[in-house]
Image (cartoon, rainbow over all chains, first blue to last red; front, side, top):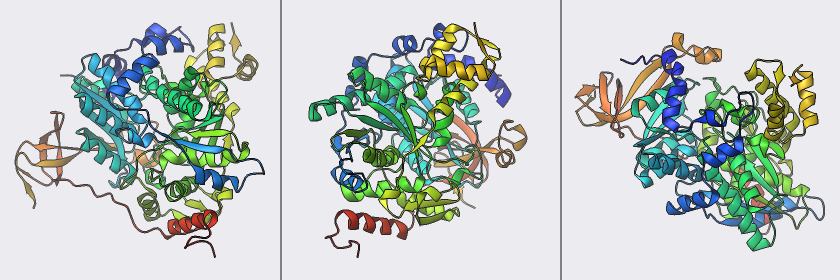
Length: 472
Length: 105
């Protein structure tokens, strides 16, 4: 009888993962910090044309690009004369499961089926669960979704409870857990028990699934406006949205488009805390994922994460919870588009960034997500109030995550606050060195770090010098 | 006491890890409580709420735990009325369409 204890299952992690993903990651390793990222994406993934075919066969993608004329007009009221870019939104809620995650799930489930797996498992409390469940239903595979859902009083985040319902509506089994990173142990146990495929968010084919999003929006902008977008704003959590979209932009030839990431600022709230769990009003798209995954992508449930956001980000901005709820109201009220709050994180940043751009420039918000019971400003704010969070109308600058939510009293108060990317890159290098346990790195490692952080050698050598690390 | 019969759709609960078995890196408040799990499935034998039971899940897996609910339903909704949101709506309309009813006075 196999030992199913925590320690025994965690010790079998590599063996379980290898069986559940079917990728030999060691083929891309070079023995140190570096690995061959592009070869991994090419050999273990699919080409853009293959992904387009797969997604088309399950009605994923080709979502409309909508100009937000009224929100653009509102933004211009607070911009210097001649400023105020045209804001467009890619209505990803039109995908079968109601979010861009259908793109990732379509390829993961297709791949699982092609390799002969009978089912798929994903560990997610977000839209990805519904996406995998929906794709498994379409492609005829079984599906288990593992969610972190409740605190110790069995009180669940309304947003997550809605996603549980959606997964079950698509026929999936949902395993719900209380707060804690040992979710990974349950996930591994289920992979081992069922022999299903690990539909991880972070595989090469999952990330390649998002490339079509960046590719489509570039071509839509070109066809309609005669140019590529000047900026694309991307809600950032685990890094796949940024990575896939940016790679798609590059594949379309939009090399000068600025890639702007945006997360909801939840600083100060511990993500593994039982008490803090229900004191946040966003369960994804926030800094609790955004910063750790940017500064150490290989923390994921696969040996090498295909989502490497620092490789592609030109700018990383933070917005407040109250600002995102405000913009969610604005999108419904001024544009007639009722969409889920978490997906509007990038819209909130774009509203402010547009004011820093010229009137004839184009800024694209690259996603929306579905809305419904639980996943809507009303239940999310009601839930916050019930948990003792104060809801105010005032200056969002004074918002303290877990204490209050401040809806802006005036749209001019909505800000995209720049997170210092140099600081993120520094943390990334520190994490690389920490994983190495050596005072030396190779020239190949240095080149890899430069590429993986979109930096130059001088910057990285400066960090290494400070950490007393030599390049051989 | 509520009784469920074999074949009923139910929810079960299980302690996955006791506080003493939890991962070392956890914050203090989480370390004090167990890791708990809830799963739904078809009951394999007649039972009462609180009994240790076995279910068959939608993927055909067997799972065991204590019976917590029979025909579990969804309880999330649109929450309560939030006057602050209504105020935001009025503000937005007032700025962009001041001529409309509900505009800023």
